[in-house]
Amino acid sequence: MISFDEAAALVLKTAKPLGAESVPVATAAGRVLAAPVIAVCDSPRTAVSAMDGYAISGAAVVGRRLTVIGESFPGSGFEGAVGVDDAVRIFTGAPLPEGADRVVMQENIRREGDVAEIVDAGSGATHVRAQSSDFHAGDELLPAGRRLDFRAMVAAGGTDLAEVDVVCRPGVLVLGTGDELYEPGSAHLTHYGIPESVSFGVEALTAAWGGEPLGRIRLADDLPALKRAAREALEAADVVVVTGGASVGERDFARAMFADCGLDLIFSKVEMKPGKPVWLGRAMERLVLGLPGNPTSAMVTARLFLAPLLAGLAGLEPTAALAWRKVRLAAPLPATGDRETFHRARATAEGALPAADQDSGSQKTLAEADLLIRRRAGAPAAGAGETVEVLDF
Image (cartoon, rainbow, N blue to C red; front, side, top):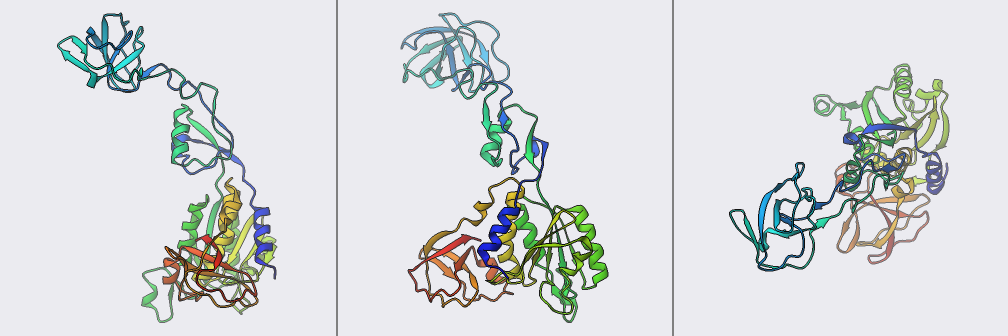
């Protein structure tokens, strides 16, 4: 059994980016760039108006009267040239006509028929976006390693690239094991059935940290069937997450089901609470993460180990998934025992408020928690107002 820090270090060492692929810009949101994004064309491609108004040549002098000779719209500019006595009605984003060098805002113009008179000189600004004022063709807009969030997606689309090179998303298949597990909606129809819930949380966490959920499979405690499912899962996914069966009972088959696939353990059991039975290994050149069956234990260990693993595989910085910070404690905590402990808590105005129910099987408390409080092994009792380490949960 190893410490949490040792286990986390092994996860970070394992979490190396997968290969790259080209995908359409339209489907690239959330992905991580494997190569820089380079602009195909200038932006703007030509000088354009920054306002609705009138394009003119020369200064905006009060009393100046001009003849309106046409209109310029975005996507269909005015084809002629603007002389010193001319004006062209123009709209935001429309190409600036030849000969024009400024736009007078429509609020500063009084128009009667084809005559436009300047009634206010304005601030002196030209209200023109010059060609290439945003970027030039050949400019790097986004570096490799940037996640395509909503801001980056605008820049990626603005380059006029049809496709971008991104890191492959790790495909994750979740295997939920246990004779007691039933699909939600059917467990209450049995005497001892329990609705299977952990796999839903693992799938949601997978999507949040850069992975691609490939599905969830519920399996009974039948070793031959588990072995078949394990091989099929390894052939389909980059990461297989198996829940339950991680202890040493007669029907705890989580590791045994991968034995015929050459399971090589990276670590087995961690000195932590909850989540001691968590393990990580490789089989058939794929990664396998074993999570405890209790919901809170499973999701605490998934947040601490699966999140950085998927982040790194997807090209993100895996250490960002373990960004501990210090906050005040809103209520006292007891002394820690011989295992490092992760308390579920809520962020409040007074600080981190530990949940009253810290049971490893609690699902209601799990839903209410948005922080994990880290308490080192052997730590003394902590009072309200003391500083503790927390992680967004």
